[in-house]
Image 1 (cartoon, rainbow, N blue to C red):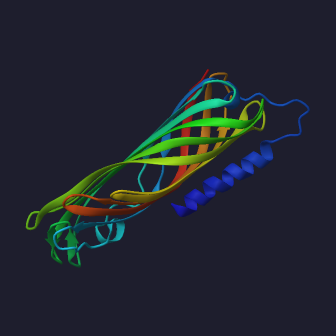
Image 2: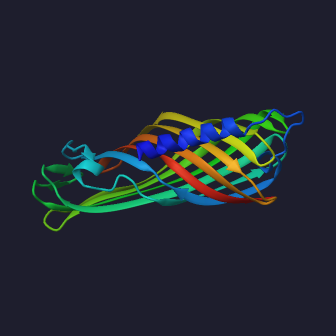
Image 3: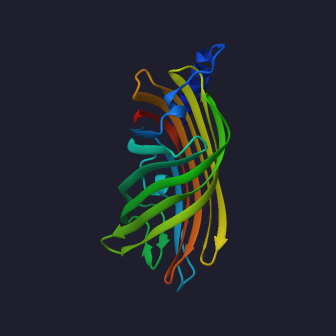
Length: 270
């Protein structure tokens, strides 16, 4: 999948370089002109997931690599949804959502302390690691021409976790976490022709507050092709890295997760 991600990035860069012509008049692309845009596509993330659930009673918790130790799939095809509302020439609101649910069952080869449960070696353990991310942001384009824009934004990544380990002999334990992670964003959109455009975005976050600490980095890159007035297509790349620690009354949960991979999508705009 990493090779697939590199191929997607190379394809976007190569296509953008080859498409952009020398032009006397600025091209008007719908990505920079239309007020409303809604899209749906398919995301192909490659994931790396580490988590621990430490009991407040014992102070013990095993750091678990879910892909290696529990055989949860590293890559999966998932739907992705997005939208944009250009309030005026300077202000915009963006949203994007994807969900990745994974389950596995495996005989573990080492003891795992998960919350208040101990899973002994050679025990069959069922694992669930469900995650979804809703990103909403408001942006201001401080540089704006008919074919280019650069801007800054403030938004939220609503990251939701549902993690559980279960065994018929040891019982089960898990934690649900909803973490609204505020982010600062930089974004840009550039029309190459009236049909082709490139868009990019970077989100950053770091926070320590009360019983929560965490950080987030998100990168998006899109090559957009709009052959019809109200319908377009895109080849993109997404990367998301999240690190979080949440203290509960009974357990402390730690999560470290990365997603990266290509995406393809179709959008309508007007």
